[in-house]
Amino acid sequence: MRREVNLKVDMVAAGTHGRKVVRPMTPRFITIHATENPTADARQHSLALKHGALRSGKSPHGNRIGYLIWHFTVDEHQAIQHMPTNEQGEHADFDGPGNRLSIGIEMCENRGSNLRATVERTAKLTAIIMLRNGIPLSNVVPHYHWPRRGKHPPNKNCPHFLMDNGRPGPKWRAFLSRVDYYRRMLEH
Image: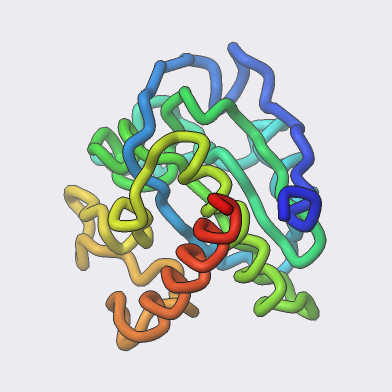
């Protein structure tokens, strides 16, 4: 299964852009996102992160470092790791527990890609990360889980294609069942 995930490591250099401040973390959650970017696959997101192209908003509730960064980006062909899983990212809820305690995984949804393959690869990667970090299935959450202070609505409809009417429902539960299936496979 690890081979099927096709994990590449392409770290943003420590001390630059999204890793200009390295903040240690003991991960307790995994947060699942959708890029909402129809033009970029995992490699293109990796390049954007490495070149500091993904800046955070200028609102008073913007993130702590001025750049967005997450741990993994997944597309139909591969998963790319951008930062160590024991460092805090900037992907969920500004200075809240979503950033301070969770590993962020972004799913690509670029035009012409196979979204079903991306979701399956993400479920496999999530199962691997759960086992490596002792994270229970109950702590695999959508971005929606983390309210964003100062935003309306506070809970983002993300990953939108796994939400039902803007909230976790049957589609999210189906994703979690795939993650749990792969977790059980890895444990045997």
